[in-house]
Amino acid sequence: MTTWTPRALASNARPYARDLWRVVEAQHIASTMRLVDSLADQAALEAVLEASKPTPPPGTERLHYLLATPFRYRPRLGSRFRAPFDSGVWYGAETLRTALAEKSYWRLRFLLDSPQTPDLDAVPHTAFTATIRARTVDLTVRPFVRDRAVWTRRSSYSSTQALAILARQAQVEAIRYESVRDSDRAACVAVLTPAAFQRPRPRRQETWFIAAARGVVRCTRDLPGDTGWEFTAKQLVGV
Image (spheres, rainbow, N blue to C red):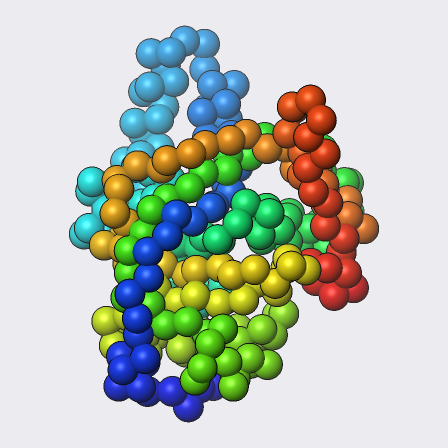
């Protein structure tokens, strides 16, 4: 767990403003298009699916779905700063490479958790930036860096999840932390509230293709001379 208190977090929170990268699968439209014969049918199907989803929480009404969606769901599986069934968290990274590394981890994790699943062919993903301005605690600097070994655990999230709960109580809006998936150790940011977004829509957008095997995940773009990045299983999960 953590020894930090809401009061200590509040006193060490600082203003933070930056464009952050995030990478998501780009199959939301194609997946329903394959099931229907016309645009009208697709629109009707999308409306049915939308009605079945949880009601968007307050504060997300003005936001594009790429910004709002993580706050809409409370999955049973936790993440680094979100306990199971807890309020949503939007994760971003300060560099594109780091955002791709973080997404690559989850592609690889799916394979490792599904031994009979074949390697995953290249799938299109959308990489985009969002502008945030938030009251933030930075785990990479003093006094929080003294607990770096706790914040950078590869698979145990109990302490970071507990910290996020306390951060919300302290009205902290975001947590900056070191990526354990990117060997460059660049920073990621866990955005705890939709109020942190300064613009309602993403800014820059790019299409990337991610192919995953159990030994390596490759991220490429269909651009001349663009070699992209690849991340080994050792880099992403330590195996």
